[in-house]
Image (cartoon, rainbow, N blue to C red; front, side):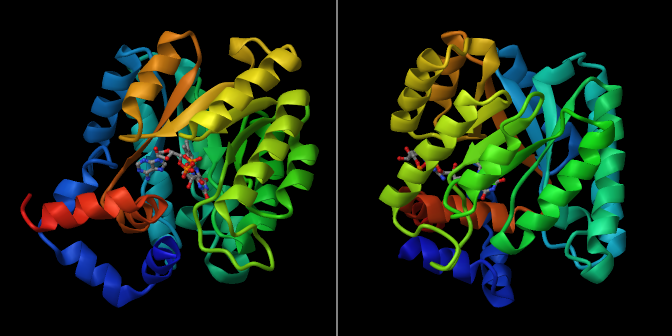
Length: 308
Ligand code: FDA
């Protein structure tokens, strides 16, 4: 309930200005965001990969309403990937892209603009041996995102996509995507969605996640199991045994700053553990979704505001 209120409020400009303007917000944001600059992102990548983790880097931003800003976001990815080239990480580093940040929301030409920008990012990633995964945003964008994915895969077949278990349609999408060479990041879903398209209760979402997971783990693609949920991690291990998948044949993913001990434990046990690193100054939407996921994060935020 509180989570839905926060997700709703996150789209109100007045609330955005109020939260962004609180001086201590930045300190709290730093728990979830690696910093604002390319150098901050590169430092985080270096730190995490030296600790045996793999990474996917997200330049923060979404729902861009301006073509120039969409181009600048793509430029920022190209600069980041260029900066990573010296580290020689190959597919230990990848980029995560929100298509709405590169033009998808720009009216009838949005899909075309987003595809052109995403192609530029894929080319830069390819040049350093990295892949790109498309994030999934609210349900109105899913068809367009999957269409752009298909177009990108023509030239960059390793391009992946996030699928949100809470959407009713996602089991069918997982079936379509569980083929050889296909990389699918399975998440629970982080947006406020209506009951007409998505499961609403945690229990239903968790059950839907397991159904999607089973489809991906039994299929021929490469599942990227993106969750901090211990129960789902243990179910993943059971399914890996059942379907004969060894450790290099699926991976875990978690968000920067969340369950870092678990991240290291999974990597230490020989799993590919990829950390999603957001950076940039447009942190508001991302930050509000992290608050909405967990009441304890709101308490942490309020404590910091109170100076504790
Ligand atoms: P759940 O929310 O049930 O959390 C399980 C446990 O994890 C909690 O009990 C707590 O211990 C810990 N935890 C979870 N969230 C936390 C938080 N914010 N702060 C502190 N602890 C927390 N969504 C989307 O709609 N589109 C996308 O493209 C992506 N991409 C994406 C990439 C990656 C790598 C991850 C890990 C997640 C996403 N998500 C996403 C977000 C996803 O949909 C979901 O909202 C979060 O992962 C939280 O769900 P969990 O599966 O972790 O379970």
